[in-house]
Length: 427
Image (cartoon, rainbow, N blue to C red; front, side):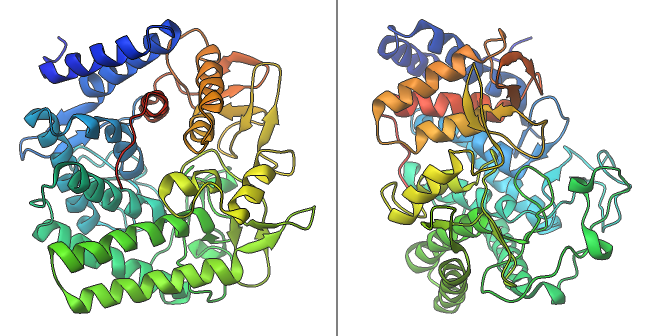
């Protein structure tokens, strides 16, 4: 039986349908996706917190669930139910982070589901324990954006403070990974799913940035200072500075946050700006502090493409402009161009598979409305005939795709369409 949704949802959707009446093909995907996430992925638990299923995998990713819920921020002031749902997700995120700040995905309950045979400190509520910086960034982002949208500060509570202490400790520890307690190995043929060097990862030197075991794709880093995720950390640390100045005044914590932010930002400036094949300055995707760097981008967000979307820089920042040109070209080994589409893929899916996530981000980081329209049209025509977005699809045949039900790209399509019609989230 379908859930009964707040009336404000239908009012909002009716308004968007009136704005988009010249694009019925967009609306078909928007209407299905905007309802699907609320009806089929969101569950209010007995403690009034919110669990958000990623789609066809029975677990909640901290990253995915934030992105899935983010477009509903536009309705947070119109519906107490939506407001409570978002607030419940924030509370659950920070409860789970306090249980294990190194985990990226969690079970609905302590049921030992997921990757329990991995060689790491697994707990029964953890689905997977691949440490990714962005898994800690996204909940901070959602808590801040919710506050900016609603002016509600009640979620900045003891649960929040305990988790922030855990996050800061992890990020400071991982600036010098040799001191880290984190190890991860998986018995697998797939090298992208495990860390080398007895679970410690490849060698790094101190840069000021903070170490990540895995990318947002859940694939291992080649060089463990993952630049887009460190960019995201800089942004959310700035949010925390504001919180510890204006909402929860704490001079000591504010200075701690500021110092960490400045060290990471200096690390990006001093180690992550390299030259591409044309001799132009660009951001590397990963570096190790030992002189190695990768010029590439992955479809999963945060990526280099998303830097202005995250709030790290403006879209006209010269280094970003050069980076964008580079990663949307054959110099990026994961950029594919075919008869149906051109865009960025991932090591997580087969060669020649473009991701709808990267297409949406290409539109969201463009200041040109025609670019946004082009991307939306491309996303619609590459839906594989399913009226939904997928993970990756073949550049020459979109009926060949991965993941039948993947809520994150569905909601990023909605966010791009809303952006096209002038809806932007305050940050």
